[in-house]
Image (cartoon, rainbow, N blue to C red; front, top):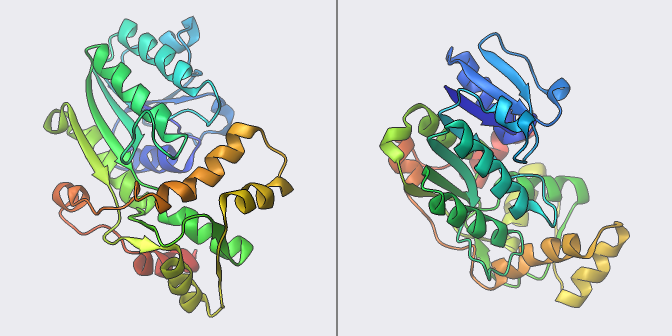
Length: 279
């Protein structure tokens, strides 16, 4: 039996929808089941990322588990480890974990560090796994351009091989349905091209017919400009380090894993925009 977490989110929700349309029976796991879409082929169960009786009951009968990373918070690694413990106890055999591209425990992008620790823990537990390392989403940069009319951050002339979220979900579906083919593998999910922030704003701006600037901030300016939103320090750190990671070259490099697995090229920014603007 397949189990899917994050079904109320964009990635997990799309995976749940596609699998349901294929008639695949699955267990859908959500912290807030009332927010999840109902499907006749799915059993909807409530659970948080913890090693509790509720979580273990939710995982009952699941052999292949899609584990979308928990909501960003300072204790995310501990939550992941607890849920992995629950999965191991209940007999989960294979975890498909949504990780992050080029993750390291000392990565510039602060949230990347949680993924490195989670991957390591899954391996230590002796569970079969597939790690899908998504780069930043192209959708994220499009949303910023359209909502704020600009991109701003200390990325300098650094580049990022950002990936379309729909490509990431298509990869998840393929791996979930054929997990034996991807046992103990790490797949890197990127777009077809490295892009700088200036290139991104130019492409989006041309498509929507607007002049969208990129403001290359210093780190000090970036922290200051984000103070308009009330947040905790770790959140400010993650927001700013999104751009410094790009500046430091940690999010560059094109992978052909999407093309190899799906038999097609990954979606470009231009292609994504064509569908994105129609929605």
